[in-house]
Image (tube, rainbow over all chains, first blue to last red):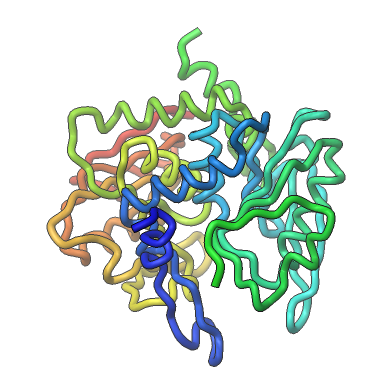
Length: 174
Length: 174
C-alpha cells in the first residue's frame, strides 16, 4: 500500500460533527500512530524539497501540530498564527467571514525576519477563509510566501478559489 | 554559552499581559529561531532518554507545538488534549478551578492503546491546575503516565504541589 493510502485510511469520518450534516475528518487516529504521523510529516516535507524556506507558519490549533513537526524536520523556525488575544506582543489582525458571523486571527508583527521565505500550513483546506486571512497577515510582514500546505483538502468546497495566485498543495483529497 | 541559557534568553517577558501584574513569558522568539527551537526539543527529548514512551500527549494550544515536535523526534504517537467541544469522538472531560470560575479539558476515550506508556507535555507550569486535570484524564485511559515535561516552570507558583506523586521535569525555571 502507498504511504498516502495508509494515512488516508487512518483519518476517521465522524458524522454530524460539530453539527448535523457535517462529515468531520478526525485526524487523531493518524496522529496517535507514530508511523503514519512520521510519514505525513515526511510527505509534507517532500512538497518543499529543493526550496529554501526559513519559517513554517501554522494556524491555531491543529496547524500547530503539523507546523511544529514540519519546522523541526526541515530546520525552520515556527511561527504561530493565533486566535485573537492570545499573542502578547504587537500584532496584525485579520477578520474573515464564516457561514454566520466573522472570525479573526492574529500574527506578531515581528514574527519573521524581513525578506525571509515562509510556508503556511494547516491541517484542513475547507472553504479557504482562514487560510486566505492567514495569507493576508503574512503579506503584511514583508516576507515571501512560498506555498501553502494542507494535510487534507475537501475539494467540493473549492477552497483553492480563495487562494488564487498562491502555490497550494495538499496530501489527501476527499 | 550553555544551550539552556540561549533558550532562556530567547523567551521574552511581556509585562501586564493578559492583565495587569502578570509578567507573561512569550515563547514566540524561541519558536521562530530554528536553532533554539531544535535545541529545546533536543533537551526535552533528553529527559526521556533510556525510557520507552509510546505517546506524547500535548495540552492545547502551545503544548501542541512542543508535543508534536517531540513525538516526531522520538518516534512516538501524538495525542491532543483539547478544550471542550473540539474532539469529535467519545471523550473524557475534566474540569479544574481557575482564579475565577472553572475550565475544562477533554481527551478521546480511545486516545491510547491500553497498557502503553505516556509522557504529558505543556509549555508552561504555572499553578498546575491544567496539568493536574490532564493527569486525571490520562489516568482514566488505562495507561502508565511516565512523566510530565514543561519547557518553563514558574517556581514561585508552586505548581508541582498539584502534581505530587508524578515525575515532573522542566527545562527552564523563572
